[in-house]
Length: 426
Image 1 (cartoon, rainbow, N blue to C red):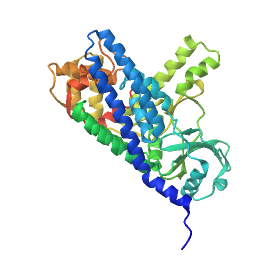
Image 2 (image 1 turned 60 degrees about the vertical axis):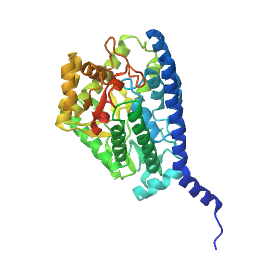
Image 3 (image 1 turned 90 degrees about the horizontal axis):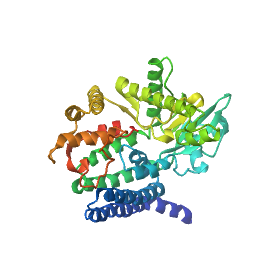
Image 4 (image 1 turned 135 degrees about the vertical axis):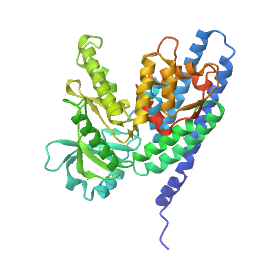
C-alpha cells in the first residue's frame, strides 16, 4: 500500500469543503448587512424631519458600504463582479459607489506556477518556445482571469496573455446559487422587483465569460463594426492573435494607456490644471468617444460591449480611448433597442406616458401597487438611466418606504433587459 501523501489529502479535503465555507461566509455577511438595514428602517421611521432622515440614510449607507466592500474583497471571484454591477452611480447609493468603484481589477493573482501548466496545456507548447519574453507578474487580475505582458518570438511588439484562474468556474457557480437564493428572499419580503431574473441573467452572462473563443469573436466583430461605420474609430479595440486563442487562453495586442480611474493623478503629475481648459477638452473628447461608440453599438448594431467598468477603459496618447475585456457582450433584438431608445427620449422630454409605453416595449410589466404608478415608473426610469437627476429625484433607497422600487411590483422583468442597459450606464 503506497504511503499516504498528507499534503495531497489536505489539498483535496480543502477543495471539497471550499464551496461550503464560501456559502457560510456569504450568508453570515449578507444577513448582517440585511438586518442592519432592517433595524435602521425601524429607527428612521421615528424621525419626522426629512433632512435628518437623509443624513441618517447616508450614515447607514456608509456603514453598509464598508461591509459590502469587505465581503466582495475577501470572497473575490463572482463578488467582484457584483461590486462592478452595483457600484454604478445610476443604481446604488452614492456611498456604495464611492467604496466599490475602487475594487476594479483587485482580484488576487494566481501564482505563476499554477498558471504555467494551464498556458502550456492550452497552447500546446512550452512558454519558452512561444514567447521571447513573458512577465511572470500579471499587469492585472480580475475575477475570472489575469493578464500578463509578453512578447512572441520573432515579433517586435508586445502582447497581452489572458489566462483563466484554475478552478474559478465551479466557485462562481456556487456564489451565483447563493445570490439567487438571497434574491428570491428579498423579492418576497422587501423589494417587489424581479431580482431572481436579474441573477439568472448574471448566471447566463458570466457563463459566457469562461469561453475565450467567444470573447475573441466578439472583439473582432465590434472592432470591424466600428471600423466600417466611422472614418476614425471612436475607441480602440485590441487585435486578436487568432492562432493563439483557446477556451481558457487569449492572446491579443498590447495597448499602452492609463486606467481611467488614474486619469486625474496623471493630469496632476504632468502639471496640468485639473480645472483648466486643457483638462476639460481631454475629458470632453473621452466622453464623446465613449458616447459615440456605445450609441452606435447599441442603437445601430445591437451588439455591444456590456462591461465598461473603469478597469476596462484605458486612456491612451492624444486622449484616445481603448475598450478592453469583451467577455460580457449583448446582442439586442430590434424590439429592445427601439424600446430603450423610446425610453431615453421619454426621459429627455419629461413624458411619463411615453415612459410607461416604453416599459411595455421592453417587456417590463408591473402590478399596480400605488396611486400614481405612471409617475413612480418615470421616477424609477430617471434614477436608473439618467445620471443627471432632475430636482426632487434622488438615488435609489431600496429599503426606504417611499422608494419607487418598493411602491411598484414588477410582475415581469425581461432577464436580458437589466444587464443589457442598467449595467453599463454611467
